[in-house]
Length: 316
Length: 287
Image 1 (cartoon, one colour):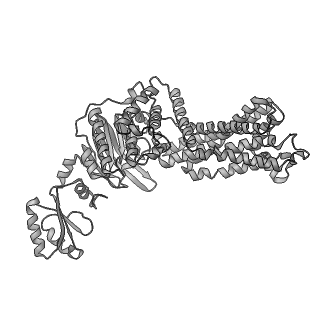
Image 2: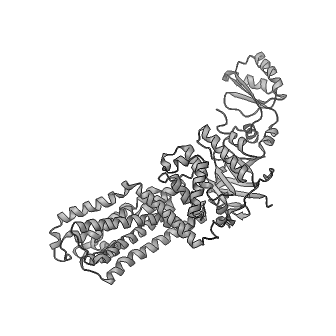
């Protein structure tokens, strides 16, 4: 391992009885990166994060955080990481201030220092006005922001965020992204982020790994991954009775790609310049088109290319 | 496949384990464990305070029962073999005390199970919090609540004319014995919480605790019982605690009674808390 690599996994595996949740993945994340771990529900994202954050023992392979083995040096790992888990609730009976103080004490931070740092962090995530209120009165977005502040109280050099914007409204999501970017750019915090949102991975991550059924299926920067897909995707919505006719026409213009029910999709060879040609061919074949769109390659196309399926929630 | 970093590193502050504010620096491991236990105890007490509705029945119900029994059993105290008392109120004081604290005794377990169920326990585990404070923090909250309840129950009994022959020191022993009993039951609840991770499973032990009070010398002396019920009552650890406590109230100070009143719940507490710690270690080692 080089000094620059702070998260490293080799053949990391976790089984639950007969079920293989994570099947021997290899990872390497550099200091200062925002690394996106993208995959659908049940792909193994949270299980991987739980192993990397010492909450779950791997049943195979190894993982090291800044040189510390997650099994043999769990205490050392916990001191240097910040963790905001998707399913870890925040005690609703406590106030934001009280939880910040508790988290600070758990990390051995002095009372006076914790008071200053707690106030500063709560202000930074926009919760200064609500700091004295019980968490039970917080909205979902406020809880996620408090969760982020709690994970930062000891100024971790590595931050694990498990589905940080799940359930957030668009405004709260943007505010959270901004804070994650700021942490990374201003403080150099390494961020390991799991998400099932394509846009989130695309917006935040410098590098992405796609996981499906416990295996890594693609890895690279968003731009590199998209470039592997090649041609843009042409999606055509037609009445079900025209579906087969439309498909037979479209495959003459490029390889078929996975699409939702009632829709045909191809990688359009030659790009936008050939759209008019496609429309004419469909017209000649007697196919009535209700909707047609051409998209540059997206991470969803990358996922579809790797797995043969569209990512859950990627399209309505 | 292997993912290799491609992006140049950004300036980093390095691992916080080197920070003087984190354990290993000014704070020794023991001091840190103490601070963590205190902080988690404070959290438990605050939780109890903000859910007072859960605490009040544990004070009101035993007092009501004591009032009813004292009124109904005015002639029972005249039975041959019944301890010499001026009023049934003196006799029933230890029963009310044990009953009152037992109401919240399983809280240390149910609250721990709640933390496990909703994921707060994982938040604590992902921090450098040591294992023992995870349990002691919840027990600490139950201890504070039990002590307050104990003082309240004794004060109310004294207001209504009860007398403690052993004096104020005996009253302190009463409260300490009650607190130890809460730790004993709380340790058992925590062990169940760790094994099951379910509040319902821990709550299911409450009827057992409650029944064991009725099947002891709490409301009637064992020498006036008969048959299997007497055998059960005499073998019941609740009787072993209530009898010496009652003698301190009715007969006066005795070091032997103080010893028995404290050692029995202390031994059970050590046993149940140890079992809870072992259960936690096993759970964390296997997960």
